[in-house]
Length: 321
Image 1 (tube, helix red, strand yellow):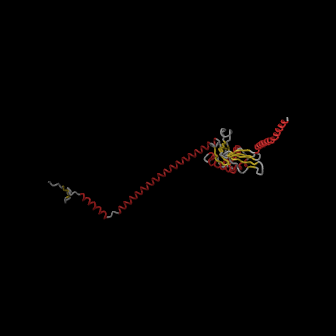
Image 2: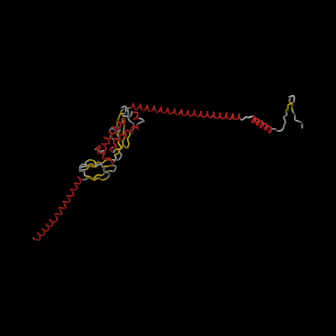
Image 3: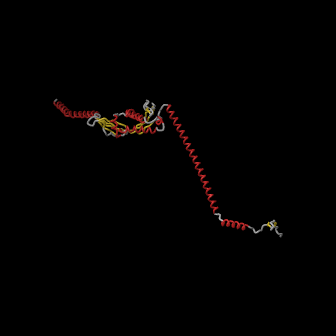
């Protein structure tokens, strides 16, 4: 019985000896679990995708507000209790506002504006833009939006529509519809760029999709005037060509006449020189040269007809052999 009690005492002693270790182990595991749970609330990890930058918003402390330095691409560890990370795309984005419900949003998003004479014009518009990564914090401070669709179809759309109206107020409908359309679009794009550049929004492309829509009567009148102008210009070009050809022929005729006058003048001058050169000595020389030529050609035979003293003719017969 004594041995049994001694053995039971040893086991109890061993139990008392090891129980603190178990307690400390359990405590350590509990602390780790608590830290893990707390870390889920105190720290978070996110990743900024390529083509994006992040804006760090400080929710507590003396530096509350948006950080002036954008968060670059990669992994970011932050505390959700004191910090918020908002991600913005910096690649080129294209938006289309059209009447066609199958393009863009399934609603009519065409834009309307008034020309200089008050004529209402409707257009489909395409715009491409990108945000400068360095100015993303300024963009957020200015507009306080984290959803780019909200910015694109709200703030940016209003800027485009207002710019169209401002520039169109200096153009008549014929210019916007016709040959000055490119100039008009260039001025609208420059105005959008001027308004958006301070917050880092750069316009890459702006233009109409298709032709502007005006009342049918106005469109027909503009088309008829354009055709008339083209026909008048064609007729003017043909007249200019005819005049040029006539001028060419006149020039050729004048040139030929001057050439003939020059040749005649040359002949006259030559004849005058020849006449002035006919002196008595030269005439005598020419006579002697002619006589010499006749003598050289004589074959030695006398003429067969001679003249008598009384002026009668005598026939000289050849002597018989």
